[in-house]
Length: 286
Image (cartoon, rainbow, N blue to C red; front, side, top):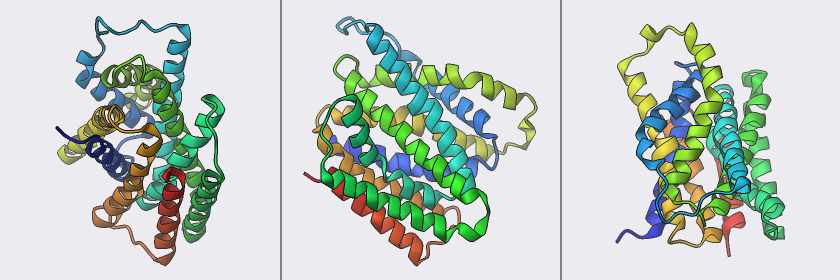
């Protein structure tokens, strides 16, 4: 039997990878069209997950509201903020900012689920904030969009944190596959008008085979595989300790940026990455 931590670790490594690779995709597809294609491909792949099992409790109005909120923030909002943020910064920067997710989850859990926020969580936020500030300073001479890009990535962090908190709330009623499929379907419905608008005048002939293959990987990794792996891992691992695996997000994203996208990591970038990793340790240590 595969240990639960393997599912969690693989999920976070995939998240870091597709965050990094999205830098290459936004150079080919407009942001809204890219997000719409992601949800559309994933909806086809997860069509068989929509059926409600006979032993599953029907959702009440409050649960449906939480489901919509999770999709609006965790799919629709996250996709827009993350893709626009990566477009204006770098894969390495995106990975470092995403390291704030465990601390953001703790904050939203305190607000929505009334869980306690410890001083260690606050210190983790300070570390992550210092890392983001270092990145913004390091890229200050590269263009005026840098600050906005990092703010968008920060918005993506809290959108993803909202998704995690909603998943924790709904996980007692829905299986991981059905949660993934329903939230993705809402994401497709919300993104479709913007995607159709951008897709109307898009030059489809400019898309290469390798671009299409990367798009399919991105869609399946982001909307299907990583989500299912995470939900599956949470079934056999304490939720309050699972956040430690987010350490793989900045590592994988930085690796993709350096190895495949030709990005350069200087001392300031390494310091920011170190602060991000320290923030994760502080946010998830028990």
